[in-house]
Image 1 (tube, rainbow, N blue to C red):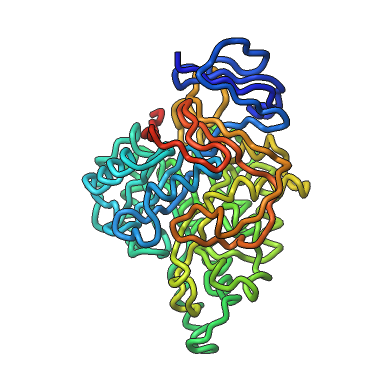
Image 2 (cartoon, rainbow, N blue to C red; image 1 turned 180 degrees about the vertical axis):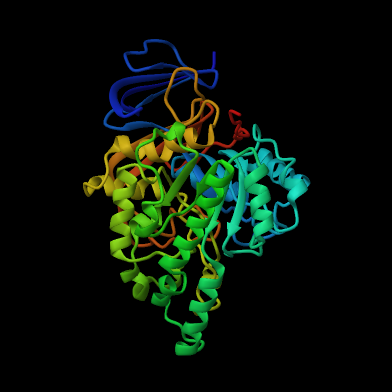
Length: 444
């Protein structure tokens, strides 16, 4: 019997905290709470620790194929495992971009060989690949990704006829990056006229403005309502957008959902002068007032999911002036500890962290048998020491790019152990790589 017992922990699941043991047999959870008094292949003492479901991150960029000097599927999955992320959904703007079924399946094959975490990959949408998009299997692929604003890569979908067809005909989740391209172009030209090549980084939220985000998000929502499409808008960054979303419906009944990223909850525009390109991302980190409204929207359920938009670039690439520094932050390893720090500062409860990082993505994407510590679900489990203080530095950063915008900061809350499908894959800084993660499956 392949049996793992986790004893004496605080089990956080479905809005409550239960003190007791957790039993996993043959990869799935068999008992939650109470006392488990059986022999086991492994017994872990979690006294004083949290036992939570593995984090499900619905938006990451792992750069493979084609950009492996930045990251690989294997390297970033390891970083995620060290941060309690047991399942990820990765974006199509690789090189070449995942715009055909063959290219999409190539990524699944890479992950099957190299990923410690469970995985899914979005099918990319372009102005020209409608037929390929319509062949996507919603039981095996997390969603379609539409860039309704250009970001890293060349995948902007700006053909209104294509957008109408996709929203009208695709019978699966559509995830969108929403920034209005014309607004950004005009704002960038204004900045160039004023500053030339020396645009300061604090101009980033002015160039990629609140209005640009709102115009695009509003358009996506109008399309979704017109066609009764299943829409999920990624990385909401402005207070103005929050009220576009319903706060009253249960998540399982929403057809239009939203995500907020940990960096938009943790950084604000006052930090550009100190951190510069280190916090340059699309959509931009905006004002403290926007951040405050994002927190309100998260806690009152206008915003549904917390994710990372993990987007690594090398130090050399980021160490450029505004026009040449790429957008994106590596955050996958540190997102859960960052949220635990917000708990220590009184901003969010442990139950809500688990809800927004584990339960909600599983509900939103209809992930089969993951995101909860329920009997019968897969044993994707994370043991957290919520009171352990540690410093982010070169010795413990797991990203292939080797840096973090948090370098030098102390965090309170450390991932001690991560299990994927009932197997310990990470424990106290050591990876166990004999088994790999599984392809995520989805209810249809």
